[in-house]
Image 1 (tube, helix red, strand yellow):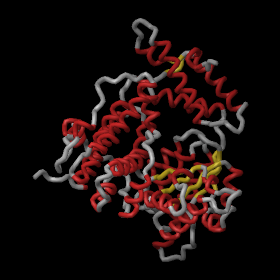
Image 2 (image 1 turned 180 degrees about the vertical axis):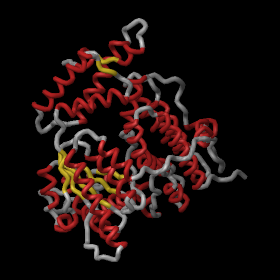
Image 3 (image 1 turned 45 degrees about the vertical axis):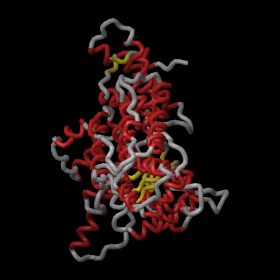
Image 4 (image 1 turned 90 degrees about the vertical axis):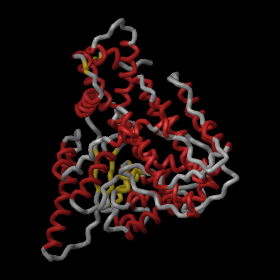
Length: 472
């Protein structure tokens, strides 16, 4: 009789497949987005696979498999039986992961095949979850194929060619307890084992240097350093046996989109870890959709899951004001706030919460609940980037991605970004607007260079004014 796969083997294979795919992503920002989102989506898809197998009931092994779905550097889930059973029962429709659109955009810009490859890897992973009972049923295979077909249709719509036929789940259907034959697709895994050990964690000095290298944000940098000095002195007083007054390290980030709030929050999480305030130093980023569900009782579970991932690190709530609905005292956002406040108390020694958003709405949010007012008393204000700083950000994007600006292109962008700053309105996106301009320029440059007979290395890299100018 063939051995049934164990939860530890599921975790090992899952982690190896995710790590191997992550290595293929050339863009650091996309790689980070993928790493942050992939575990949550795959856990949801596992629930869908198990719902498709109507002949099988949820067992403790399903819970073990569910809790085995996490990649290196991410916290392991700790779901209970009833949570998994409820998740299976309430699974609705397969939705492509948010990062899949970014994979397709990367493929269009760079000529890669990341999206198609992810569809194949997803098929393998879903088959792995289907093997919880040692059998891949026809209904489970049908669900897996439907997921892959949804992703393939998006690739087809974008004109992304398929280098080979899609992997089909039908090939793994079995009526005996055997493990799906995943090994032929696991070639990258062997290479992963030979990687050198992970780099040591950055020191406080290295993290502060990284903070200093961020564009602009002079006041924020001063505020962060002042906060770290406060923490260090408090620790010294504690070691010296002196009284240490209560101190809240939870923060409010005020400012417009694209001003570096998430970047600073991620650095702060690592800094708090480096000075011994937090045990792990990870950042868990959520917004209202990541905390609030649509039914009574489910919001508490959803918010608790987000908090659990953040214990030992920082829970970063973007657009936190959306949790408060002034028109409805019964809005589920209030339930999420209560869960967060309780955890801030229960885990006050190993959890930091940072709430972020526009200045006006955030002030209303803080004053909407006495518990919020008492815990959030430190405010960091993120100013808009001016024209010169926007240009610095654009240059750094060019350098990081292997592009250069012609002299005329440089003058064009300096003028364009200065006008963007001077004419900004409530929709001004700061660095986000710069990233959009950069991506559009790269796409236009690709159209231009593709028409050249034998483009040189310099031509492949250079951005001209015609690439930078927006067209109607």
